[in-house]
Image (cartoon, rainbow, N blue to C red):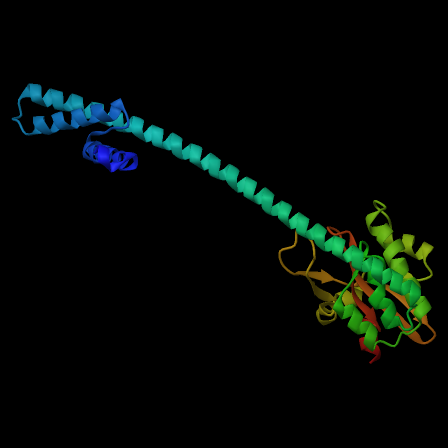
Length: 286
């Protein structure tokens, strides 16, 4: 052994100890209670192998009662362990939910920072290049007030095909929506929306359709839009009502800006920005 070197000697010792440990594994117990349970079970088997003398019967009953108590205690301990694991799992789930929420918040803030940077560039371009058409007004106005208004693609399309081309009035109308109308909805508690806006703007707001239009299901379907919020609380598309609208006019051309006041986001969501939507009145005239 001496000629094998220190490392070889250590390996031999380790293997020897391991073999002895494996041979004794079956005799190891985690507690004195386990040892007592083994002794009791052995004795129960011995008694059952004997005759049915009274003293054997009484000892057997006593041992079985002890065994029942032993397993009752084991059951309590396992239940306590499971309860502890359950509490730990619930806490871990809370921690995971909190971390996921934090990740969502950070992603949202990252998107907002990117938008803010892009909007700053857009505002600079607006100053250097004033819009030449109402369509351009619509495409840049959202960048001027990103925290107050959101203009859906459907609104941009309606502006493209609409007849309204008064750049100055279009700019003023959308600006009043972003500033005056937003203030009425989200900054003044209990404000009368129509009275507040109409007293401060040259344009007029109607916070809903006429009763006849409201009763017409087909017309009301045209005033519904699918909307997918871009915030940390959103999980699926919403259906929003854009019946409320602001009215503008330039000569013989009319503009209707239909919107939805989104309470959670505190934004004016613009879903249509062009010619009249059909109403019960226009349907009668046609």
